[in-house]
Length: 204
Image (cartoon, rainbow, N blue to C red; front, side):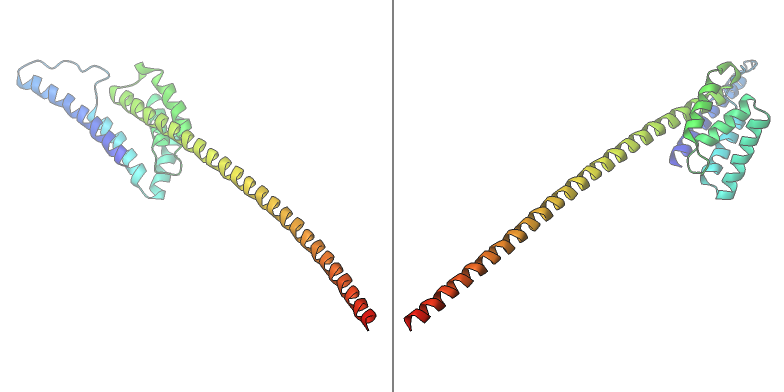
């Protein structure tokens, strides 16, 4: 959520600065020039950011509605704007339909045709793509660490099980040796008792 707020501030500030330049030119008596096609549009930027903020912070019903609407628009009218909107929805964390991998693929396709993008759209696509790719790297690293931890735990458990098996086998051998020793001792005791009894009988 904090990341989205920071992105929103950055984009809106860029748009505001662009607007200030136009106002200064007017105050200085400069004739306004036709803005280039990729001029940052404050309203366009605000609309994108507001929807993404609502998506990330809204309740499940609101999130589902925004996702369904963006997906339907990208499917029925797959122009650059609708596809970008859908990609940004997929890239935004905090809702069940978040899909970084699909978002990454869509954003790369969209950025591969920069001539079709306004400055706002290009900025949003670039920023969200960088964010998605960073999260994918972190997720992959987290999975690797979990797998390594699981393998280490499995190896340790196997080693413990092997030690337990060895100790149990040694205990069985010791019990058997003890039983044999007790039998031998009992036999010796029996022999000694028999000899003593014979000696006593001979002494009489």
